[in-house]
Length: 334
Image (cartoon, rainbow, N blue to C red; front, side):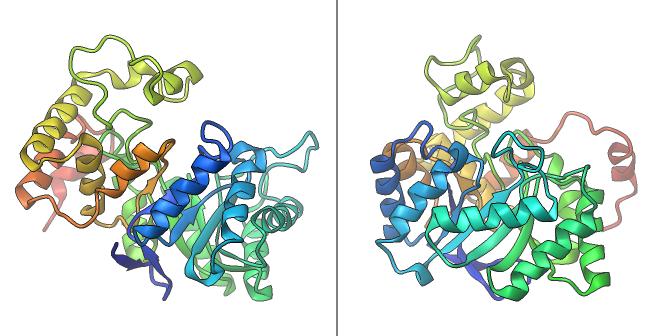
């Protein structure tokens, strides 16, 4: 496992981050602990969770495992926003909710600090200054070491960076966006902000809920029974019709071809493209089973040839870009 700096900070993290969204939901505690063991044995140090995962259960499972380990060896990231109770202040990014949420996360994790604390999604009901000043206070008191955000638009991310700089508050070090071979919209505005401001990029859903795992091929007319693709389609989160397109089949064709050339799986090829894709710092894998974890971890310690990276990039290019992105490509000067 290689280690990379988290943005412009001095904190180093493993090149893969282990996501825990399945823990306590589709993955039981003993299996979750074995996945954590496997990740640690491979050299993984970066683990991501959120208070809303399993309504707190994922943090509890991770906390139970951490008690058997040396805390200083791991970079623990969690997030807040989600609805944690029936009250009107039990969701969002108000000062009250953030402070209540961070104390609850500390209890569930069984730790006295959180290495990376992230705003899970933009809150249009709370002034951004209120959220950012609260994060700054948490860093100053030592409860939180670094701060980041997830699921922000380009202008929201830039505004957060600028307000923190103007007020002298703790700077953001990372962004968690949706990014993979099938979802490349983060390249339009989010990545330029991250490059300019020195933020780490931590892609979630690197296999797009199973679409890039190799289970589905051109000609499929419905999700494979029991697959994550089926679960996503049934939940309406990743609709079948939104991804069962010619562009997707083109990408999956190329992934399969390169998997055959390299003797790797489709998932390993898809993750490897991300690992070699600037400005990605650490993709967040979310294995449900031990086999999934073993497969995902095999994406490290080898590389795609530049020509293979280019083929995947070309196959996954959007067929057309919305205005003004398509127009602006005509004026790029490099």
